[in-house]
Image (cartoon, rainbow, N blue to C red; front, side, top):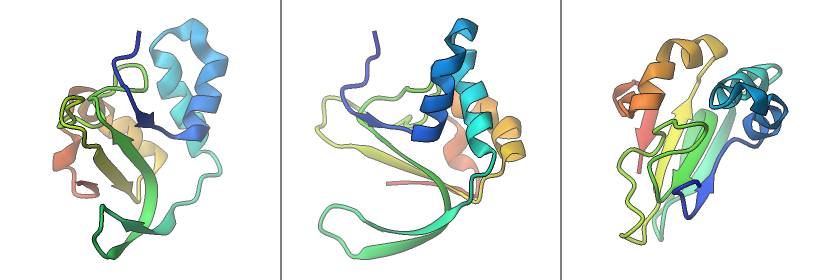
Length: 121
């Protein structure tokens, strides 16, 4: 059972991962890599709480959650706590497929927040 009460994840990766369930937790990695095919990063305007709109250039993914894990055990929102009533938002900017592969271990152990093109709110 997934411990996340609320989560938003890459629809592309989730769509592709569903076809590879026979590979267990690896299905999400395969799905994410397949999702990179034809993907183009987009500049996005984001508003957090009642703050001002902020432009985030070249967004690859926005992940929001109140629990730490999704995607086959990726610790994507490592500071999230389901008991606070808040969401942690992690923004990946200008990621390429090879960045995903090279930084995959950081996504699984929750140390990706130290990567220069990853931010959190």
